Length: 228
Image 1: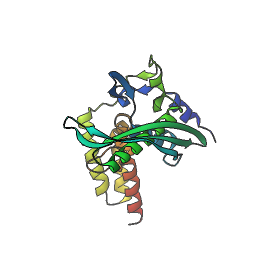
Image 2: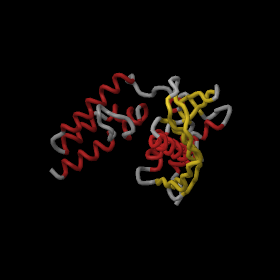
Image 3: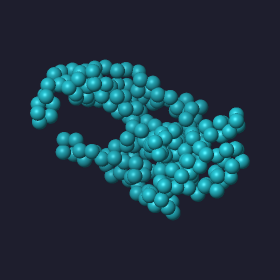
Image 4: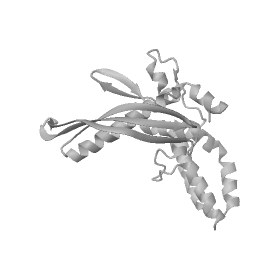
């Protein structure tokens, strides 16, 4: 298998600054993408069933007692290293990462370290696929990191309100015809959602307390009405 022309274009596209986070480490500002965003992009570009993730190795390389915080509470510091393999459209890439956990409870410290290590390794594997997964951030000039801006006509507040109302209307649809009419009449806000609030479309952010995402919500409602 190989990537389609559309997938190749997506992987070669620039990274939008809106999806880049910042943190300080040892006094240096670092740019990175969140783990959930990498997964959302993989679902968007490769398809929900177009990629897999496998943890190949997990090793605890450090576990020691330490003091935590200003109050110097007794606790634990733990470090893990992990290797993860991503297979997308039949193409395999691997990445290694590390994670650190600090907690008064040793078990919680291990849990935090393992999760962080797996996310780090996953992002490093994804990064090799292209700019949307953070490859653009490894270039010191960040030429392929662009200011995409807010694309749609509605501002974020109005779009958020419209999407929440739309989600309620989807759930309230009594038959397939009424649902289809709703989808057609609301195509402007759903299309803007895909561009400006993609995490609401894919389900990587809570939409009025529902984390399924609009796409899944719509498809599940269609199935419910078909079997009604």
